[in-house]
Length: 481
Image (cartoon, rainbow, N blue to C red; front, top):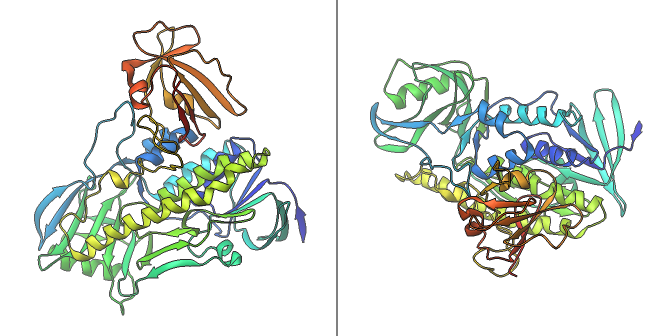
């Protein structure tokens, strides 16, 4: 048995949550090790919907351009009853970008492709995922965590300051901590999910096939970017084994057509409604994030996105703790567990709409886009509240070149903004400071002009207002004068 003492943070699980956290830590220069018991990267689209707030996170982490290039907007869905086209609609109505919200629309990209891009970004910091490496045991003490991992060549003992379990719904970390995973699993509903080629369908569109007498009991096929595959969701009987033949029979019966042929699934799984929330997200130096902390139904596209937000919230707080400032770390559970509880409720409501066959079951409103998530902990101040998402806004330098507030926020630092006045209070450790003036005011060489006054309006800022934006893009405080 070898003993390894290198990472400050050990992450178990290399899905989107674990990868996001590893990138956020690695860009801060924090030694991180990320292991996954799977021998190779996972296949399949799984969580293929990327919400607008997650796109903002990817902007900050330096992967947005790659994600946008590889993915596509939500497709137009064609709904058929008894083989007759009855409606065309998008799950989310497209919105134009605004100064405050530059990425207002969800994006489609298979989860395995999202993970591939995140792994590539992580590798730029010199960190590789260790596949085929399972966390088998751990203990913790006042100063750190001692973990045992099993690799292809033997057993290692790893000493780290913190351990994060991002190891999915059957989390070994959560089980070892003895944390209850409260909720329900509905055994009465079985669905077959997977990715298949489907000859006879236009890959530019998504499809819903059902019978008139049971419009909710249908089969959905959604095109996946970057190839000819469709993600499918189909009802599965209790005594039915999943197979291509079963999927083909369901498609023939529900579509009323004989010209659609599905190939062998490149990935598939049997899904049951599993809605659960961990009783705790932290025990000492060990944390839970992503599916290890909350299990979602796929309705609404919330699970993967909520896990990514967990990681984005936790990364800067772990960094602060390792730098000797433990207070922010204590807010991780209180902030993220409340959000997960709310999002689980939203996903459950959308699932109920599907089960009930409601006409609006496929519609997704702004509440699913995670732009309204807040960590409010103080009273309202001038229309903004500490804990709210910090909006974007266009700016102009004294030389006439343009930039955005998000450009100022990008990176591992906090950002101090002074509106209408010079920045006479120096930024603190780990902060960068900027002075922003209104369009009708002369700008000094070190000041930025709020183009169109958007920054002042979006931040409810009068001259003398100061705002501190946390490293994860949420307001730490907002002070007048």
